[in-house]
Image 1 (cartoon, rainbow, N blue to C red):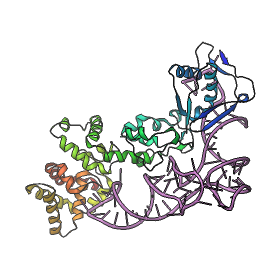
Image 2 (image 1 turned 90 degrees about the vertical axis):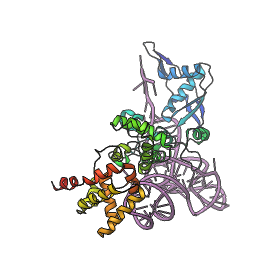
Image 3 (image 1 turned 120 degrees about the vertical axis):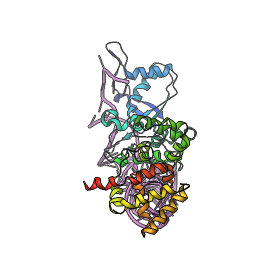
Image 4 (image 1 turned 135 degrees about the vertical axis):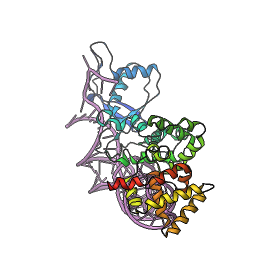
Length: 352
RNA sequence: GGCCCCAUCGUCUAGUGGUUAGGACGUCGGCCUCUCACGCCGGUAACACCGGUUCGAACCCGGUUGGGGUCACCA
């Protein structure tokens, strides 16, 4: 075993941190430290320095948890007669309890895989992360990769630890709300073709993918994603909240079921009536469908919203969504009619 | 405990001696609408404390308190 003999002298060992300024530490406060194990293998502290000298590393940028290593490593650089690189210590990111976050103690929430599995767009996560401990000095928060490379400077790295603000067990905020909102921003604004690629991967995993989406039905696929993405937050939402557009096994949410269906028992006859009128339309499009739906409501002496929201619930299972008549076109006449006719099940299910 | 770092809304942050202390996310309220976890508008909310320096401190200095990191033959 080999220890590094720290000079027993007065004075300090120092380096100029580009973020924290000059850092000094008295020789007296540094104990002799092990650099080679008794089995002959070197420790990280030494390897790190040797590798960086070999690779001619000019800047060492790492977390503040390495600060006490740095003074010892400066000693190593000097002992090896090598130039000391520029050191930059980044603030740490802590959890709500102000603990350093780590894989060991925080598990999946700090693993990038978790974000991929929860429908995050890769760059959106990077964009969120860069804002933890750094800012451009302007109000800009959304950066393309190129913009970020252009805007980034070491000088604007902060000194203050940040808190990763996530609420465990809250389905709406399963991770930091700001991360979700940045992801949603990208989801809403990225070219739809790129979104289509990401959704494809998830759909394939979910068994929702149809190869026609890459060929004959590509336009329909992309325009439908574009129609519904506006109120989604992650790629996962397409297979869950948007499921009704791509499969028939979607679930009817309880809230809209009660509010828009069970509250109006007459829909049991009204919606099949509507289905008949849709069947007779020529052509079946956004305008003709809306005219037909509103005409029916007027004849029945009810507010259009009753028909429309009833339809939304039956057709999508959701309380909220795009404009109803856009939905009809996206679903296509056959599926619309089919689902409107089969409304009985919703009532019998709740009666039982 | 020793040593080191840090301290502005709930969270991410702007701010480098004179600002109505700004923005974003969240939250709350309103508007829009066939619906809202869309969009728009508005509100809420912060300079840890105590001393200095100064005509004047969020900004400079000192102390206090608080928080974090690190003290392995781990990386």
